[in-house]
Amino acid sequence: MNEKKLKSAAEAILFACGTPVETERIAQTLAIGTDKAEELCMQLKEEYAKRESGIRIVRLGKSFQMCTEEEYADPIRTIMDIRRNTPLSQAASEVLAVIAYNQPVTKAFVEQIRGVDCSGVVASLISRQLIEEKGRLELPGRPLVYGTTEHFLRCFNISSLDELPPLPVDDEDSDDASANESDGGEEN
Image 1 (tube, rainbow, N blue to C red):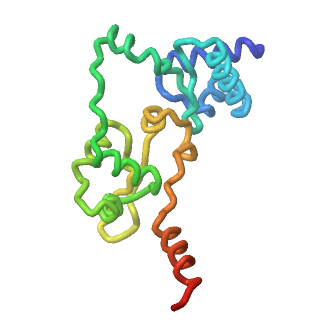
Image 2 (image 1 turned 135 degrees about the vertical axis):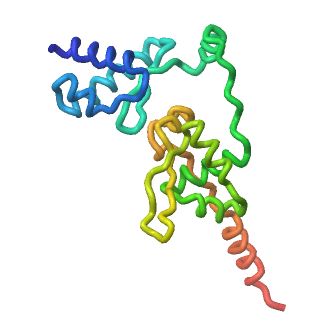
């Protein structure tokens, strides 16, 4: 297949699947290298962005997915009669942040940081497909470890966890240091 046909085939695959498709699977299907498949998907992504289409292609880690632009969410909900999902509670947001920044983690780790039981919140985040079980630790009781999902990346419109905003720097340390400097200069 020539370059144009390969790109069209990649576009058709992304459209037909409706879910994230790994670059490696696209490469295998089209009998091309993984680098070439990624290049084709990135070209498609740029083309959709340039023409300001209602559809866009997003990169989710090592996968690509075709989806709609956020600005058209309301008309899409109306036509499909979809109710808005309820927003995450404060507790769910906190648990999700702990997991996203420290994954893979156990429920006990999250509870230690938050200081409260989080069983219900973890179950709710699993049902929303924002987190998933990633395995078990080789410790007594073999506790489950959790991490975020590709759905988490889509919901937060990021292509990898590297795009998460940096954690704030603890101001207490810098306040203590500056207080010591101002007090330490004079003796009575």
